[in-house]
Length: 249
Figure (cartoon, one colour):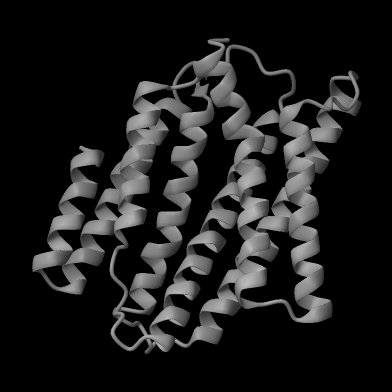
């Protein structure tokens, strides 16, 4: 149903009003959330790279759905609809590993922080892409434009999402260290997930410092944001994909 819903939204926005598209996007977002809940709140719950990617897409779509009500001229981007569709299909094909026993009762908090960080950074990436499109439309009049939305407003939203995502990523890494070193008493493990997470944290820290100290913006800021986002994607989704799909562990 969710996959068909994303397809229906893509068709509706071609032939109907923006209000109907926004309502359709809200409905498919609810369906996507119910699909996620059926696996995340099962007994026992399952989680892996595909559900993590699906939750990330769901959060990014939530942000976009809210903004489409603030800026009615926005359309549901085909790339976002495709991302939602692919993430749902992947989560159905690769539901992840059943979490039979938790090493710590606080581990779900670590997951929640990490997923929220993924979602906010994904929203920042969407806005950075949106900002690039707006800049392009300003240079080339023939390109369809959303000029009624100020470019500086998009830029501010982008860095607000980066800042919020960085704060949650910092909390995620801090919680991971606490659970490993204090609760599980096994010390900090420098595996692939930890290394890529630490590298992405460092890249985002440099981005925010560059923004604050040297006023980074435009192409430079977007490149650093994309680099940090790619590293963050490799941290959990990438490492779990290798374990679950390639190595079948």
